[in-house]
Length: 79
Image 1 (cartoon, helix red, strand yellow):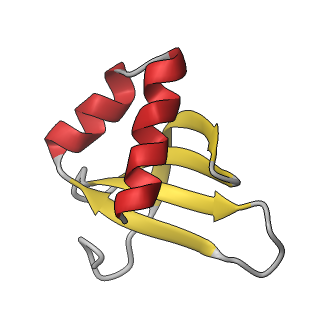
Image 2: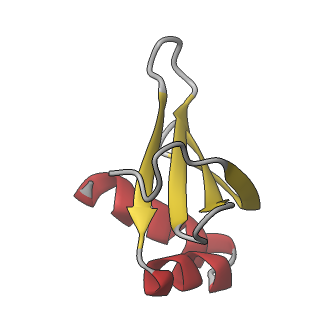
């Protein structure tokens, strides 16, 4: 569910690649809501945005290396 009527996003951080997906942390320019953007490497799979809580966004931003990959894999499996 979008936070605003026509949200525009800025890139906060490229989170990396896991489970055949490129992951980016984005933020709405109007209200500041965080979103996780998923872009599959498979043609036609599309781009998906999932709204995050501030705590979830913080967890992604503060993760690094193997911990970040594991966090992304966990997110993929749960969502």
